[in-house]
Length: 137
Image (cartoon, rainbow, N blue to C red):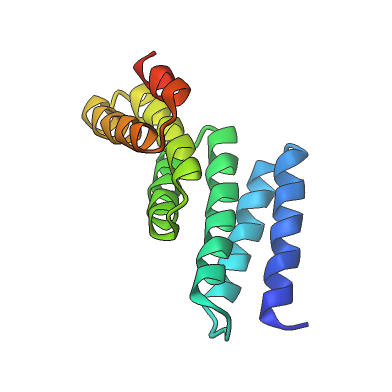
């Protein structure tokens, strides 16, 4: 089994663990997957970013589920950077609003406002009128 196969299998296992309520185990599996991703791979950079995105998204949701907002923010920030680099505006706006909720719940109002304003811009640029209206709620 090569590193790429191990990464894909690990990601499937991590997603299964997350969906079956085992967020702590999900985080551990994702950490192991990140170890494999840091090994040299001969694959296209875009695919690598997508894999990182999938792992960080899984870890972000796992940390949200166990109410570890500090780590959720850390992984959420990285995830937003990955989505911006890949040009995935849909996922960027979804994660942005989730991050706004986390910041707000942590009384980090300045960070929440900054991200909220960027989420409105992203939704406006994407022509997502419903999403833009949701931002104002």
